[in-house]
Image 1 (cartoon, rainbow, N blue to C red):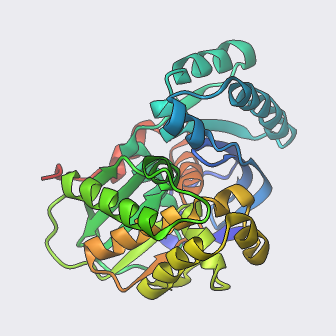
Image 2: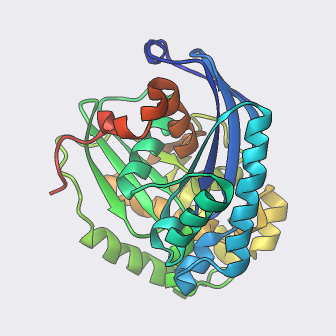
Image 3: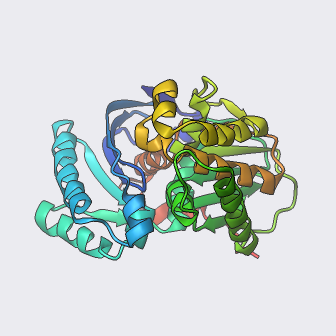
Length: 329
């Protein structure tokens, strides 16, 4: 798999081979790529549906079994990266921000494996996702990008082609399922409870001021891509309508996740939360008055890869080149 770079993106691009490990709420995901300034070619792509978000949402920490699984996978992925002579970057998002034993995990990875785990703030997660999600899309001057994960949601608002602010929401598909004690399949009462909870979260969030209505929205992350599967979509630049997102929620109330996974070729654990993910998607679309959204094929991992290709070892420190100029209101 490859994706092309726009001409203006190529000027500061350094040819490189890089591996990225994303420790997220749903997956622990490795990709290794070769980037030459014109396109990024994926050399290896491996993932484990570890569902760390379940542990953190219900227990507040990573279980012993999954803790050991992370260390085992990091060792395996590091060897895989060395076989390609790739620079390896490891990062974690919401589960490593929230888990009580995350700091110990980071320390053990360093001491036992010699590996550094970067724990991203929500702002960093938002900006890396933004860079990846928008890297190959032609977008109007006013748009919004939402990365809906398992444990959190980050929304970047763009006015006049400039980031005007970032909204950081403490909810994702796994966390919403935990908050509403959702069954499989969802019940109508649980859908209403989830919508009510999302209303509370959206009402209390700090939203940046905007100057113009948004012309389009972009969704990043596995939850959005899972919903596109229901409509035989998933290619870069495909759109989802508000009605299709509502249909996804309805489907999650009428069929168990095992049946959905088989019918739509979804990973079983992803099928278990695509309904709550769709509810968050719908809330985002309602918030910004969007009738449809573009689902990007790329996201946080590609954003990290592009940052390393542009800035080398300063890939994280120079993220402020994307930072929003105005604080949230």
